[in-house]
Image (cartoon, rainbow, N blue to C red):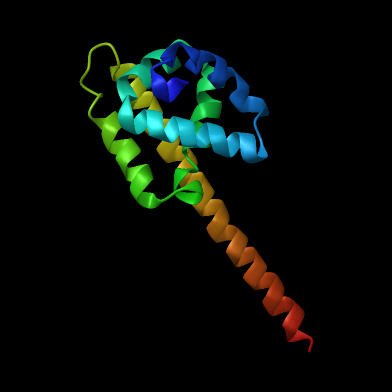
Length: 130
C-alpha cells in the first residue's frame, strides 16, 4: 500500500519495528529501503515526527541494509538522504539519520571483526593442545 502512495501508513509501520523479527523484519526493511530510494523526503518527514526511540530502531534496521540486500542499495540510500541535508525542513533528521545509521553500521562491522578474532583465538587455543 505504501508503494502505491499510501505514505500515511508509514508511522504505523515505524511503531512496529521494535517488535519486528524474522520475515516481518525483512519485509519492513525492504519497504524502508525502497521508500528511502524512491521517496526519501516523505520517509524522513514522517520519521521526524516519531520518538527518538522509534527513530533509533528504524536506524538500526536500515544499518543492516548491506547484510540484507547489497552494498549498492545501502549507498543509494545514503546518497538519497545526503541530498536532503540542505533542505531546511529536513536538515536535522537527515543529519541524524546519516550519523546514526553510519554509527550502527560501524558497530556491526567492528563486532563482526572482533567476533572473527575471538573465534580465531579460540580455534588456535583449541588446536594448540592437539
